[in-house]
Amino acid sequence: MYPYEEDPRCQRAWREIDLCALTHNAKVLQRALAPGCRLMAVLKAGAYGHGVAAVARRLWQEGVRDFAVACLEEGIQLRSQGVKGQILILGYTPPRLAGELARWDLTQAVADEDHGKALADQGTPIKVHLALDTGMHRLGVPWQDREAIARLYALPGLHIQGVFSHLCACDSLSPQDRAFTRLQLDRFYDTLGWMRARGCPPGQTHIQASYGIWNLPPQPCTLARAGIALYGVHSQPDRTLRELDLRPVLSLRARVASVRWLEEGEGAGYGLAYRPQSRRRIAAVTIGYGDGLPRCLSGQGGEVLLGGRRCPMVGRICMDQLLVDLTELPGAQAGDIVTLLGREGSEEIRAEEIAEQCGTLTNELLARLGPRLPVVPRG
Ligand SMILES: *Cc1c(COP(=O)(O)O)cnc(C)c1O
Image (cartoon, rainbow, N blue to C red; front, side, top):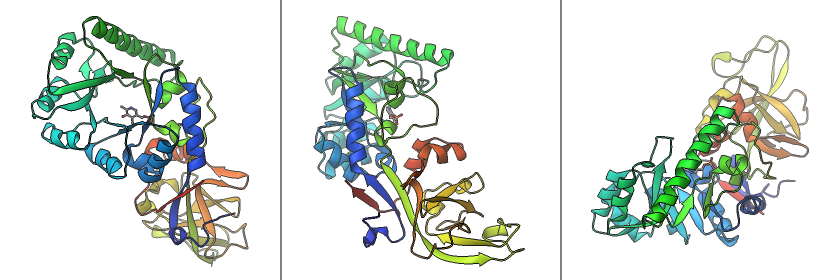
């Protein structure tokens, strides 16, 4: 069942990355886009905790040529791993680092007019995509500030190769949020139309992220930036308008360290927070919040899979370990594999389930999975 039984990476706790699922998701997403629109793979935060190296290599093999990251370091890391094609930095880069952008052939998102001017002033021409603020009010030149857009186009230090915006409410299907998304789309396309008429060629255009793909019809853009969907999970368990057949890429596994009986009247773990009514058999498992697992999970219904069955987490999650109740599994022993996220036989623990229990998004859950967890690609 586990091909990694003897794998040195699989001794304590690890991330298993299903590269077949990744390939499948990239194909499904590409097919969901309009003709002429390409998938831009969002690889920020260590490919949402999946580890960039294997993910980037596989996507490249599958023909993906456009990537997005959050910051300069992540862009340099991707280039150092031999990734070619376009790498767009979505977040802010201090203008004095424009030379680094050019040196690594990275494309920078322009956060506002001052950012664009300061980048252009550094003396090294750089490739940029203009961010338009169509209502999120995070980054971007305000969509209605046409003169600012024209001024940026006049700067010789900026090679504007694309224009994009970000939708901030399109994960919701409420009429109010859908109307707001419509407004953002109208502002975006109006601005693009004006730019074309004014001799400011937008070049590449993009506005959809994962929920833009799930909840909007295909858009007349050249790129769509998919993050969480590429990894095969929704941000939250909510319904989406389009149902795409995406498969989770990441499984999280650890091992049983030690099994013991907890006698009636005894407690277990920090603060003896677990105090069962009867004699229970419990095990220590080799993963904790120091690996990125949310500490709040225990006590919120957190479970693990062991021998293909669900076992509850008990007591408080420690930095490097946690406790589970396996009274129903008399055969369990030290060394057994425990699944915290992923499939074992017909049972599956999904990221959406854990994120909901912890009151967060799968994006946060996955992005926090720590570097202490080796990445084990398969497929
Ligand atoms: C993170 C991010 C994305 C990807 O978002 P998902 O919802 O994970 O697909 C796309 N665009 C921008 C600007 C982002 O910051």
